[in-house]
Image (cartoon, rainbow, N blue to C red; front, side, top):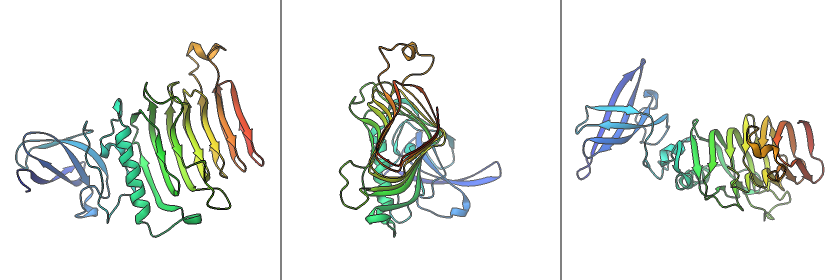
Length: 308
């Protein structure tokens, strides 16, 4: 124990798969939990994360039941020596039911991603930090953002997958829901300051508030798709600025849903679904179902195939 806080370690067997639950609590109430499969042995809380949840505990270590999510932040950092290969925004207090703004929680997600990359023994081209393939997993959650989710320059080899990001009503109308890299990348011959970034199985909803849903700047080898649905952008759905070899595939884009009356009204249709300002990019097997302009290309040697 530390002060008046008690530490409990509870072993539970469920569906023939035992796991340990670590929690701290001062009195009867609801507390965050960690679950670990036994083969992980005695890892520090927060490492090799399997599932987040909420423990409802009585005083003492014997009456704890697990539910799915918590409304409050769990932690702001993980163990430096054993960083996880999967980052869950709910670990940092992000609300997966889109009732409250999760921007501050995603700030911690990006800090954890940078920490993992800095601890790596490897780099990508021109010293870009290699995050080792770490995945930011939204686990089917629906998250509100009041400001952009920014992935800074000089980091690569990571993924964002499986969930929804939406702009709040107050999201700045001149910014993008997700912003990757910088337009001022002049440190190498390829003008690429990020590399190998994946965006898969996502819905990005600018709610006709955000300028752009996904902005990829000066990046080499980004992948967007499969199963990416981009909706509700003021100016552009996906904007690729510079870089090389960004691939967009199996993606759907629309300024409005087809059932929205604005989708049939020329006074409301202003946006461009995909803007490619650069060379050597690919757009494959992609559908634009609502926008003034489907595809805008400024640059050479871009491949477009099966775009509707």
